Length: 227
Image (cartoon, rainbow, N blue to C red; front, top):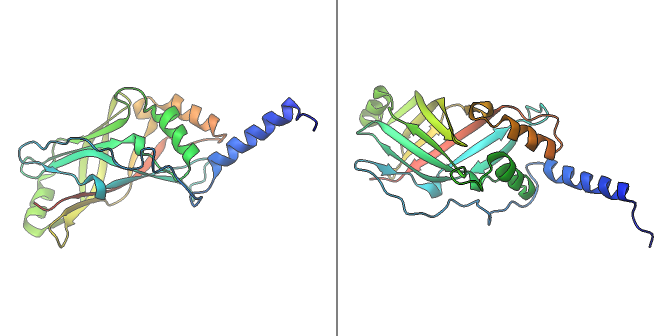
């Protein structure tokens, strides 16, 4: 058998890499064994806090590549920790970036390692702190067991940098007394606010995309167990 010319071999490798990173969201598989389940760790609640149910909570990231707004890349991301205190009017969540799962293993590895750089100490998580929940929202939850379109502001720490984040949230109680919180509209986070523009360009180049948008939209669905 005649050897494959080096140039042809490189072309085949490039096509294979591009195809793997461009697979549609419906492609079979994922890599649930590599971080798609929330990390198990000892979690401690401060006085008055209610710990988040990490097994019943998740975020969905949506990223636009090649200006294809109609078909964003979506990925589930789990929480590592979190808590809310209605008495203090505060909340916090820790997002486990190692659980980024778009159902395409090669994409997951590239996003985790080349964009988030999760192997670096302290960069495997993102932490959102909400120091003050709106008084009206807390009162509505207490008196009416629900609130719609609450305007909430917090500080998000990612990749060693902290930026302000605004969001609109709905919240209420389920039949079993569990507290749920969901985003009314997707939360918008700008990659450039965290000094990750170069990482985004590197990811785009590796995956052979013309572009990946600076804004990531995040749907939030969080649950806290009944008291």
